[in-house]
Image 1: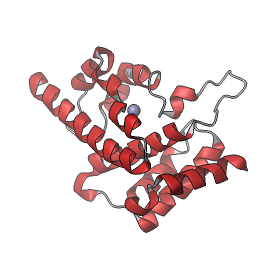
Image 2: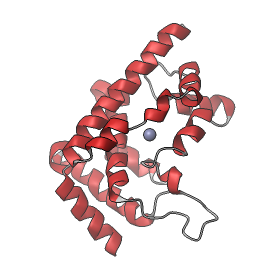
Image 3: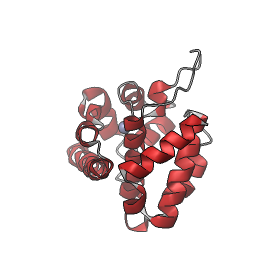
Image 4: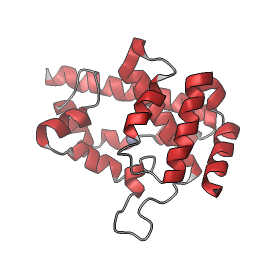
Length: 181
Ligand SMILES: [Zn+2]
């Protein structure tokens, strides 16, 4: 079972990385697409993820959290990956939720969309991310200006689809508009 889960977990990660890579290329951040989530192959993340492998239905991190109360894989992951708002969040800093640089915001969007596509499988629709985000943003430690940005982006994805929404030009203009206000 463990051996099977090792290969299944690698499969899920590679499938996710491949989708993220394709979206990152569309947005013009090819390098971010290549190095996305590489820390998942470190022992600190790989071992708990295999142990709490959720058979492709959801994230092993969620399963590890519900069984242990915290996730070792996540604590390692969020500290090393700048596309997660949790990397930047520091509640005792003068700016607890800084505005993330544009390239990491793009990587975060590609990541969130790809995660939804992998976990939903055949049930994925272009409205999925907007629905998911509406819940997720209640607890997401993201700068309010970027929360607004993701509202706009995922509404666009719901209405017009990923190909039209995920272009560098479109995301940059939404980003610039949201952070200047
Ligand atoms: Zn990640």
